[in-house]
Image (cartoon, rainbow, N blue to C red; front, side, top):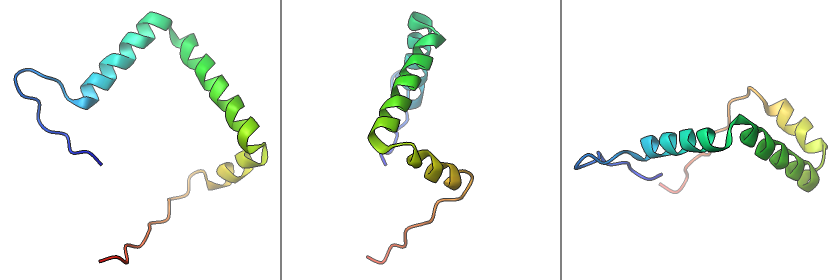
Length: 73
């Protein structure tokens, strides 16, 4: 994970740049743009993994992820 440094000389953080970029895309294309790309992504996932994939991830919903043990120390 990258370490974010404090901006110097009036720069902005990575988080701020991402937020501002997202706001500009939303202003330029509208919320329908996000709906369409989400729909396309869902269709691509269904084509690649099949409908049973959604059953598996639905069962995992709300569960805490298992932590990987770090045995290399």
